Length: 316
Image (cartoon, rainbow, N blue to C red; front, side, top):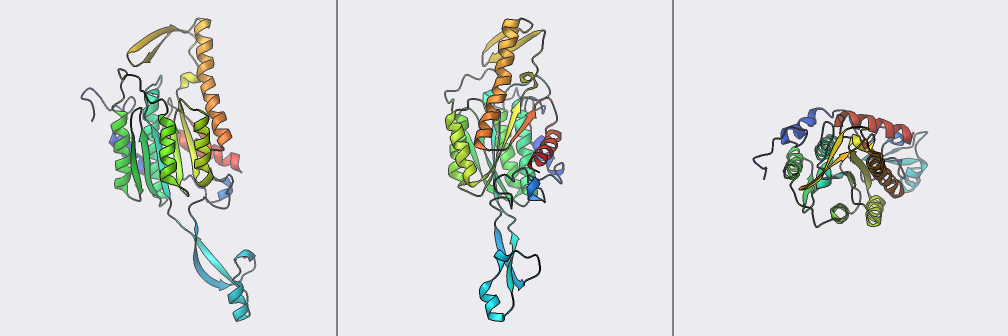
């Protein structure tokens, strides 16, 4: 339940109206381009996105250019003319959106906190999937619990997903004690693996803090039978640590003020922050999961449009 002290300003804390409003703003966006070769998810299965499937449509006369693998030999021999089976792409697939709302996400130096950017990306992804005709659900995980929203093709299901995100988001607080569950990301991936099975689209939205070899293994297992996208949320300070001034670092109730113009502070801290981004990029490269990166200092939807275009260019 939302704390009476929480103000859902859309930057530190997300609100349900904020997430629901993306419904009208994602028109024309898709994780699957019309030409699959330039799809974000083309990868090892460029002919189509796994999970859509093909359903039999009709039996018709062969026409020049038809795929010979679709020849129906029995009908062709029976009628003395070549016949082919035509298929239509199935339009329904389950989409699971994994949304990180751990304490590591409760940080921001510009515009949004990471937790709010993750909430926005989750809502955007959900609306894109629904408008593609897919069933939408997800897993929202914090430091101490994971909520599962079963995929359905309905606006009310997206509202349920967004409500779960907002609920966990608004329970984050700088006074929150350290969690005893350091492997919540892996636990969320394990839960996803048991729920997804195969032929799902899975969007993982996180800062990917506390990853391990087990994380890599779980990502590979998910990708073996599903389409997986990783959206890494990071703060601009990881790319460009201020050269002067003071930086307040907090972990729950403990606060430390750092003088960042001192080399013994700025270089190790800068190396650590930028190094974390490189570690995650390498982890996802090894798992062969497409990576999109999102800066909390910029508009989430604008960045997603840019990232979809960038990955489409890479896939050409």
